Length: 67
Image 1: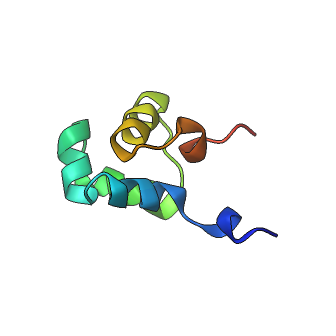
Image 2: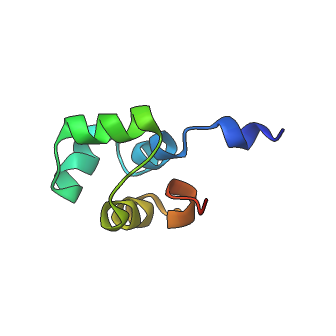
C-alpha cells in the first residue's frame, strides 16, 4: 500500500494552517475540538472541513474522502 494512506491528513492540514491554536481561533472552535479532529483523523462538519482545507491550501476531499 502507498505510504500516503497512513498519513494523518487532518494533522497535516492543521500544521499547514499554523497549528491547533491558530486554527481554533480562525475557525471559531475550541482547541480541544481541533485536537479531537487530529486524533480521529476526521472532521465531522463539512463546513469546518472546507474552511480548514482552504486555510491549509488542500482539497477538502483530502480531509473528508468519499466513502
